[in-house]
Image: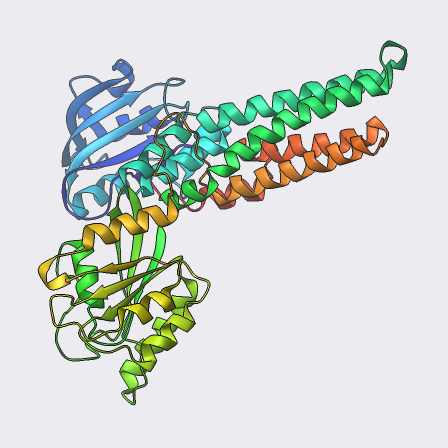
Length: 458
């Protein structure tokens, strides 16, 4: 499989000490030599070496940049193609000038995710590992990074391929029975199918049991902080973020828009959303903020309802309890350093089984208990960090569920004495669903869509 040579900036935009422009393709070294000037040419350099020199303008021989160029020859590279990586100064102008030089010398600007896509198409990684690369880049906590690293290393792919092999052996046995019925009996084949199919279904169930935790580690928990104005919502966000991210005043209605920030709570990423105080108001701007708050509440995975312990429970507070009915929630009883006016028994009655945590955010009290309550709500026994293979990707979860359903259909058909060649159809379908996880049966449009979500330099 041959591709043209692509190039892209592989480091984040902005100022930094070093920036990297990456080229991959059969002409990567040749293009690099057109603009590089050092003690030796890049073509003469050994593989997996870094070489000092300068980039020059080919037409004028003017020096453009002082650089270090890594030379990596196929097939022992990320894309299994020749790669060069130009390390230049990290200024916006300098790195763009380097990219312009290599593009004008014959390289093509890479599409989003095209380096990783080539690694997949060239057999360097499978589709689940490619998606793990994206998860690794986007990881918000150490535990989320560990899950992504495990996926990049191929642990999920290895397990999925093992399940596919079990199903393939079952299908092969059915085929032998169909082609050579004198050597087997339907009853023997059906018993084998039930045994193998049941074992694969149990392993899929084990993977799906990790799906909730894995998805949370990957995507985070959308957490809406709600409450009446001036109960301490912004103070709560600042306590989690450990900086004055939200403006805090004694004036009701200070927060008029939705503020978002990612925080790490016991290894779990929370996407904290500080909302405008929900109340009836005639202020046009505040009214827009309140409407946005109501929308955030509907979309949240977790709600933190903040109440003012120094005031009696009001109708607006009770209305918020009603609005979050059936949702995961923690009740934050704030301002406990002041004289308590709220009826705590009524609060606990309205909260039901939801945790009620007393806090004084002004005194930094109760925040650890609140974090414990959130972690317990989503991870009853804590986050497992051993050899467990997490399934965190929504696409993988969907394919596993469809594979499980196909196996269930096959087992039900076998119990109903359906002819074995008909049962085989469901087993084959399960095998195909598992194949889509690692990309062996994935359609081209799905592959294009997945890699389009990557950044340009990856």
